[in-house]
Image (cartoon, rainbow, N blue to C red; front, side, top):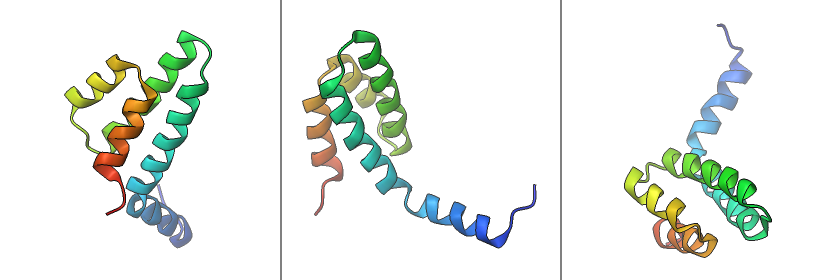
Length: 86
């Protein structure tokens, strides 16, 4: 598959900024989790959050613990403690 230099540059910038993109996504998911009205919706959001955490190289056991806790506040606290501005 041949890509143009423009496409290559977009892909390169995506991977350079991937941690920031995943943190932004997690922040948005935390907000959506607070507002989720059904258990099905919460389960879908937690699945997406688990994928984003995996993309940030968070240990599977830690991801499973956060998902099992089903507490958006715990997710926010985890994000702040592990990825907050220094």
